[in-house]
Image: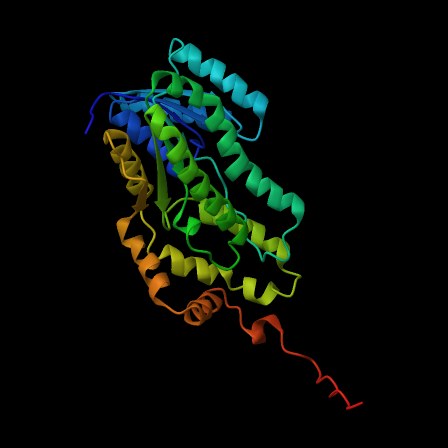
Length: 302
């Protein structure tokens, strides 16, 4: 374990897991540079840190992970705040969830999902890695999801980005270890944030599709998932543990009991798992009106 304060850059710090983690790490004595697109929320975060008189330091700077110009400006500001040192820990947390049937999601929305959750993550990583590589030390922490290893109905676009984050992180872990850089994946399960409310707004766009009746029950599906939701502090504590450890684990499932879903997935036959997923998403022929409307004529013998 290491108790030395670290310089930590955190993306997506204006709400949810990111905001909670920024305050928690500053409370642990670290110098946190919290970033996000919404300037007003960043200023509110800084004000809260000052009011709480946290032992660490919390600076803020705007950063849109989908804009190379914004990333470049953030690098300049980080260098100013750290006297050219850079960061010890980069936490890629920025992201959002797009929900909807895969066959109905258009290219523009799908690209927007990947631009933020995948390409944005890699752009920020490339921008801040050189200083770590030069020092032969650092940690890269990518916030993925249990949904980076398990696909849920209507979550295909979001899950796809998290599968990519998992794979990219594995490759980065192999490639960066010779430089003394540890790569860690954080895999939260259901967490009590505004993620669900934000994601559910995208479902309304598909009310007039063949999935409309099933999606009308999507709130019940969300309620099932959120019944076991944990506080965002659970994730913040897990991230802090990864920062403290000299040799952190490759993955942290948070809360740990969510690991049980991986065991269940491995034990169940594919047909049984598919049945359970259809039940979860209310994907029945009755609701989808997917039954044939009339019988096709039998082919006649030639």
